[in-house]
Amino acid sequence: MPGLVQDTMPNFRNAIRIGADVIRSNVAITGDNKIVMYSNDLFNHGTILKPGIASFTADDLRARYREILRGRAASDSTEDIEGVFPGLDDVLKEFPDQRFNLHCLDKTRAIMPVLKQALDQNAAQDRVLISSLSGSNTAWTMKMMPGVPVAFSFYGMIIFYGLFKAGVLFARKKFKARVLIIPEMIGASYFANSGLIKQAHDRDIMVYVNPVDTDTLTRKVREAGADGVVTNDIVSVKGTLL
Picture 1 (cartoon, one colour):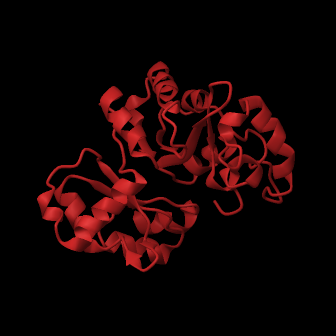
Picture 2 (picture 1 turned 120 degrees about the vertical axis):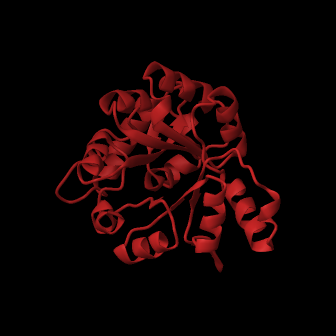
């Protein structure tokens, strides 16, 4: 929802209330071995991006950025301040029926065993999709959590598109990843086209476009055959998806 950009318990609750089917959030491991959830906007804050989340304890992260974020929250709410960096374990308990796309931005594999433990303890393996920048993290998931679907890594997505553009995708009938999360475009390359989406569907791969924040673009990617969208503005796109 515009103006509510941080990943917090109140914002998750609000997203579900206004129609989110799946909650997508970044996950990372802290210096005290806890998994926290956070938004792209928060991660891109320079004081986090440079040292990395693993350089802080979970409590230090929350205390350190609560005051910094106070001036950036929506003017009439505190959803972007209170509950920043919620723990994955707490979120899974708070929303026992909600599906999640957990996205690992860090390339380190240290997060994966702790992530598995959290999913096991909350019986949540059947309601998550794992995505990662790193192919090693998705490979670990497929080996250690074979029942959990994974999305193509960033480089895996680039390879899929490259094979499609080169006209040699026919040579690959099977892919282990079950989901493609693609941008509409990268530079001059148009990813969200009907040809690529059909090729993915022919291989039982679902396709979602990220980000899509207008009804016009939602209609365009749905007409191309996409299974859904990742959005920061549920209200604007939900009607077009129905």
